Length: 365
Image (cartoon, rainbow, N blue to C red; front, side, top):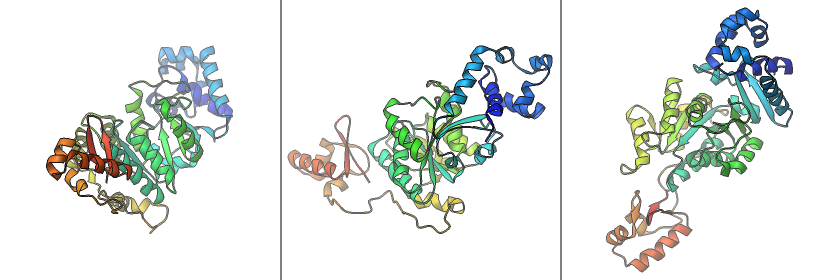
């Protein structure tokens, strides 16, 4: 890892206003390491840097920011990894715009392990969240690290599923490493920091902002061998991640859904554009087999259709796969309302259906 003195130079460049990763890489190509950049003749440096960046290099505010970052690394399980470190994720070196530094909490080695990104809607359906959790666990059991963005919905379910398996998970933040967003994922973030890793390219204290998350998405796909999309509207951050994955040469997978659900439109568009349709964990694992840590490792096959009959009810067949209301169920099953209500309660307690807003019910596979 970079020494404190060397890290301070990296931080001074990355924390200077007006210097993005592309400009910093240009300076590194021209001068060498950051301390060589900062040691360049003042007149030459003034011409090479944006005015705001040059004027900030010796400012008390920048000194304080660098000192705070260095002090942060003194905590257990905290690292700042630079482009010059051997521990820097190899797969990020393959993308067009790798971050100059990464702030990491947790198990640094997770960033260089075979990984699969799982992304999807923040407003996931009960079935979508269930798919994310179960598929993530299957991939985790196969030895893959699951990468996602700690958001509500599909992201959170994927992190939870990964932690239930033999592998682990990496959460890429759109905030500073010391800021958890959304706040309701505080506990999940702490568990990931212990059993996996949290990672961010943003300086300490950076609060959530709309422009941060598309930028973060390229790292979610960049850290992984492939990207699985589970539920996504046509205009969504998940499709931004999928496009980044394609541009980075990663495999893209998508789970199909109901033709009537807006949350299926994005996945269907990806499949039409060439993404691999996924109905089981093995569909993706077959594509990634060469990268799995254990050749020929036993796989936990997970189909989208039910694999058991813990609850066998004619009402499940009448429900179909799309959300349905009580009136439609009464017409399809030919049962009285009281009987349908009782059966719906039994199925919900058994975990076979979910109650949705608006008086709708949906079958869980």
